[in-house]
Length: 320
Image 1: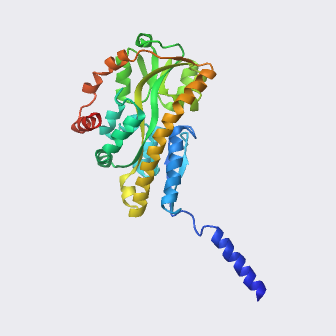
Image 2: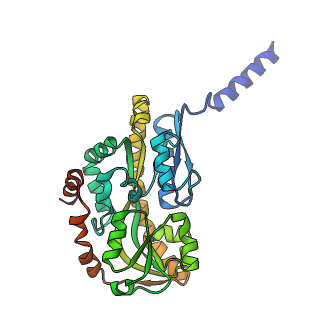
Image 3: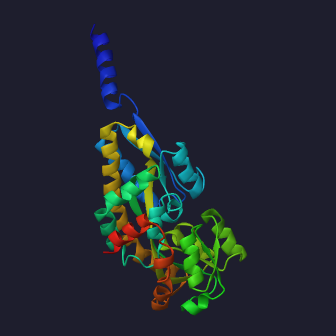
């Protein structure tokens, strides 16, 4: 009898040490940035917070580096329900949530904290815009302040004349670089390293985090600090899939997203100077062109690119 009791006690102890079941809700999240880049770190934080808030009942499986497709495929995966959570550049999502085109405008926010304050203050308006297009907005991460990586140095806006500059596949970005007298060349992020290496493009716009994470400094050794765009990375779900979840899981997702976004935006800020220092150590030539001509050239876009009442209303809310 003693042997049976001992065996039973051992089984009971093992059961107590191991969770009785796996998470009830496992959300598949996809993005195209490298693992452990600042965007991915934000999703990892969101995963930890979600597990904590649900006592392990919900978790997130993160597929980094375009494992589930490029940015357009990621957004369409959410729309079709084959991907649960998408983290993409705003430049891609604004092709589907047209009000978000506002965030594609150059020189709109002076810093990442300033952007975060405006996003948080106007969350209801932004969520409504997403809902109208079939998405639920869970968070708005930062993709950093975007600069220029080039084969030849850029010391002024005049140096961009005729340069083939890779942009995202976004009409506002294309228009901006036309205003800067460059030759904008939209292409997929996954094609950029090879395009820089082969000379298909002379340079690209991008953040220091991507410049580091994708090792673009190997093929574009000049980095011009123009800060032309304060880029956001919205986190979205299909609205109908979100609405079908229990209320406590919905709440946990939104809370985890909000808290992760606050953490992630500060993390991006903290990474900037160490990254610039590391670029110099790698032999990157860092220049600081006068941004006034860039800002002046960007002004017409505030009129020409905001064409709907929703875009104009969101622009007013974010800039006042």
